[in-house]
Amino acid sequence: MNRHPLFCAILTVLAVTGCGKDPARTHHRPERLPRVEAVRPQRTILTRTIELAATVEPLQRVELVARVPGVVDDLPRDIDIGRPIRKGEKLLGLAVPDLLADRKHKEALLEQAKQQVVQSQQLLAVAQREEEEAREQEERYVADHKYNKVRHERIAGLVRMEAQDRQLADEALKQLETAAAALKAARATIATRVAKVKQAEADLEGARRRVTVAAAELNKVDEWIRFATITAPFDGVITRRSVDLGTTIKDAGIPLLTVMQVDRVRVLIDIPQRDVPLVQVEENDRNGQKKPAEVVIRIPALADAPGGEFKGTITRIGKALDPVTRTMRAEVELDNTKGLLRPGMFGKAELRLGQRRSALTVPATAIVRRSESKLGVYVVSNPQGAARRGVLRFIELTLGLDDGLKVEVLSGLTSTELVVARGNGVLRVGDEVTAPQQDE
Image 1 (cartoon, rainbow, N blue to C red):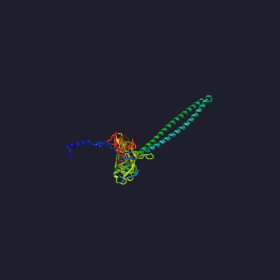
Image 2 (image 1 turned 135 degrees about the vertical axis):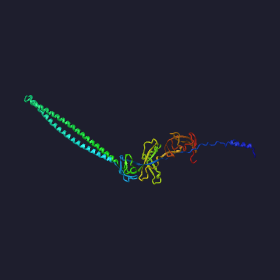
Image 3 (image 1 turned 180 degrees about the horizontal axis):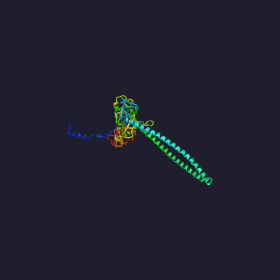
Image 4 (image 1 turned 120 degrees about the horizontal axis):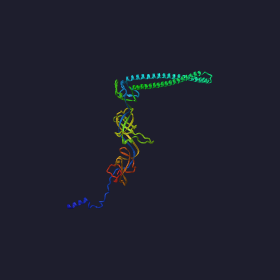
């Protein structure tokens, strides 16, 4: 049937606008809500590892110096780089004629001081004998004085009784006064002899101290002479030789040999500030003891060598951070009896900071940072129906270990919440979403 063009146009407009449609066919469609990928927190073994730059250093390294000027006159031909050495082994020697001459002078001074001690001992012995003689004379004068005193008293009594002549009493008095004067002189002599003995004792003590000083000076010179002989401080290897036979050493601080202990080495790593609290322990074992963090050292230069991977634990760790790099130095001590590790090598250290055997974890992509200190996840609260329809809610969390894929949740969640796996999308608290199962 032919229709007018105007009639056809009207029918087209009605079709576009929906006019004339059956009401049964224009029933409201179900609302289409945003779909999110959601997971539940899981209990799993979580290990936190980081990779850091590593540098190999010898366990011990010293630069040997003579500390005295001289001429190298004893240097065996085999004392050169790469030579193994044993502790106490003589490596080289210097000629020090000025020190040897000084030693002879100090020896003479010591001998002179010893002779002075002998002389002082003899003088002390003489003074002590003189003091003994003076005390013996004092005893004789005391007895004489006592005799004359008794005699004078007896004669004086007879004179008072007019039984004796007064002239005899005067003579007895004179003798008593003479004895008293002699006793006083004897006691003065004793005091002089005692002072002489004390002086002799002081002279002897001074002589002995001079011997001590002279011996110390001689020992000092001997020590300086010993500095001219360079010996190995520990078992190791010579890595540098800076002198030749006949070299004149003017500056006593110039290094002559460099020696390293390489049978054991230390690997240096610098741990970032954020990982410092985790580096000291790995996990509490069954006895509650803390185990040191495990480290795997890989050196690119030894990648193809057998045994090129080295395993160890943190041996030493600094207690302070470098104020410039904000890192803390840690050391791993390794056995190097095979000699694969050489001081100065560099590589990577894979450090296991911690492990939790039953950690509650969520995907790392679920973590949302709202501020510098506020971290959390979005959860679908009260999911209903097969489509698990619910409202978004933000939960702030306390986090633990992070292995890059999963993050440990210390508080804020249980294993029943439905967590949005990708939280950094266009999500807002209060939005209604669906979180269907993965197999839908």
